[in-house]
Image 1 (cartoon, rainbow, N blue to C red):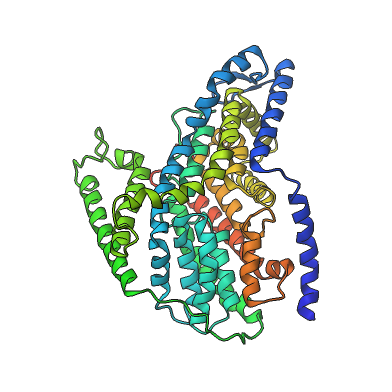
Image 2 (image 1 turned 180 degrees about the vertical axis):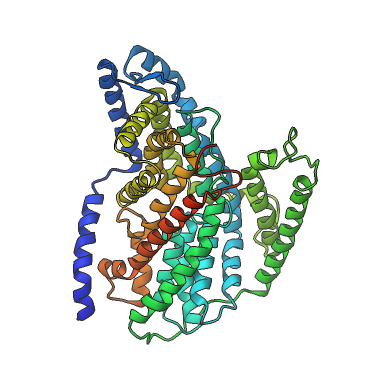
Length: 506
């Protein structure tokens, strides 16, 4: 009875948030509405002849009217080009082909089971969280596969499965953008950031590895923080587990073990070949002019290299496990991963138009300079400025399910504004990633929220939404706080957030 009473208030609160969130339209329609609002806004600002002064060169910046003759003449010939030329589209679809093959042949699932097979009771929390962070390589698939796996790992070592479930949800959701490897999120967000940066400079862009140092370090810090939270706070508050541990983690078959060995050998051979193409002084993938690695064809081609890596290891695993018996099986295995991207492709059409319209209209530069003037006149810069972006991003995440959709709205405004304040666009992107990821398990609009509740109800039949929120809430709170402290320390020390990239523009 006491547990039920404790959960009523949070349940009512978040039910209210859910009702409000349900009124937010589908991302496709949201961008259609935003395009209409943008067109009207450009017409009004243009008719008023409002201008702001660019502090960089002293030029007056005015808004271009999308509803003018010139606007219509630009829009119609560029609609298809805006869609097909949208930077993240090709990269993310290609990456899904590679990662999708690894998932379809069972390589990713077997790899996670292998990593968890010899975990001890004492370090189960650390292992679950680390595997959860590693599982981000499979993007949204991790949100489906990892939570029940976390519960099974805890059952296998005689600990409470709900604690393992919550730790896994925290790792895949609250820590969604913390990665040891370059994944789909890096490709998608960096493309949006690069497009937004064009409003200020055509020479500054964001690479898929520009947040890598910070995000990889976040994996270590958040694994420790999340494990301590699970061991010291979450699990001790749970009632004793009386369900037994018959639901054991299934061991890998002999064939799957041979497949992993083959994939490991293939990975080592691939890495060795890439090293020969990059490490030697005059290697072909180094910068032909400077001989360096940053920038170089290797860095610029990192996405195709990752895709090729996926193909090599997935084919090696699939051939040994008989998932791939002949060459014709490979394109068949790629169909389902591409089907799963249909919703993304549909959303990209209005999204790409909105970004292009925003840039052509000068609205991004106009708003960025205007907001910069407000911040400067109020004496706000540095840490207070990016803390504002962080909390705004977290708030929007509660009501808009797609993180890329949120960044597509914020990036055209905040990337130019931060650049004018002296920050690198990759730093603004990193701030958004922290906030958007940290609160993800709480977002009422997330399609994974009912799934997480269903996982919980396997072990706690009477669990309701309030029960779930009470259990998961400490993780977003601790992850968000930990990330803020790490960010402030990183900024204060002036450490690089990625290879050759610092918080401030140089």
